[in-house]
Image (tube, rainbow, N blue to C red; front, side):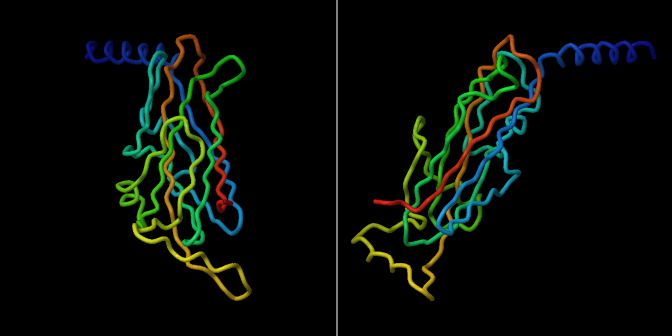
Length: 198
């Protein structure tokens, strides 16, 4: 009876020692769309690195990839015959306060293949190269061949065809500095979507 009790005390002591280094981090999104474009988060509306790894310690690097369940997913609904420009304004760190920061690198991808679920959209997603913060693409992927006729101009009583695209937001957190305090590190990513103006 004494042996399990001693192991429980050692385990509890070990957990309490680790508590000083445990970090939690989450990114919230600011969504901005114009001209009757609807931008909707599908999952929690946050990118939470603790969904990938529940306990994050100093010295670690956590990466959420496109294929991971922790990726943030948004849909964009708008005129299928027009192109949209998506711009992502992301911080380079997640912050607890002025002196405690963790490096952050954000990536994103889109799918405009006409998929009806985020699972099928992820399989056809196009990853935007690292370092790019803006991308322009048609809401509905065009087939090869001659270009389509120009879209019908806006007029009373006419509603153009609509389509849905998927946006996937993911990235890398870290390497977590050794000297940062434990806590809830947060940041905001602003996503702007508008019809392209050529």
